[in-house]
Image 1 (cartoon, rainbow, N blue to C red):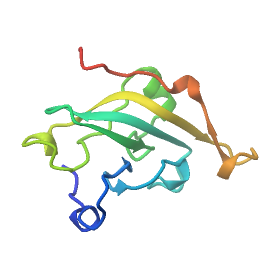
Image 2 (image 1 turned 30 degrees about the vertical axis):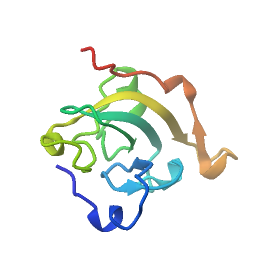
Image 3 (image 1 turned 180 degrees about the vertical axis):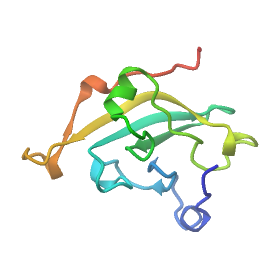
Image 4 (image 1 turned 30 degrees about the horizontal axis):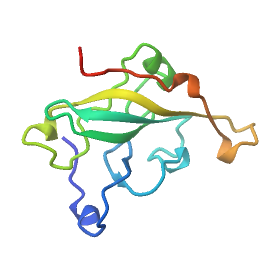
Length: 135
């Protein structure tokens, strides 16, 4: 179960745009340099859904979510998993029901040697559908 960030959510009238790896609500456009882990070599923005009510969220992934594997590997084998959905009180069971990863919206890899923004390079070949609720 993730923490409910009432102190943040109650002060901002709009809905969060995305959630970081820990379920913290974020407002504004996603950028890989805004994820929770400042040392992450990879960053993903994915569309996930509450397993119980199917409410959709945009959520970031890093090595915080996937230990001892590269995000690239768990995307390719379609085993990327966020854990419980962000705590937005989407339904009675959503707080602890788990989230389904639907698709990878953005995949980023950090390359310190490249002249790209903050060393991040986007790779669209890994922006794929993971689950479509039919399974």
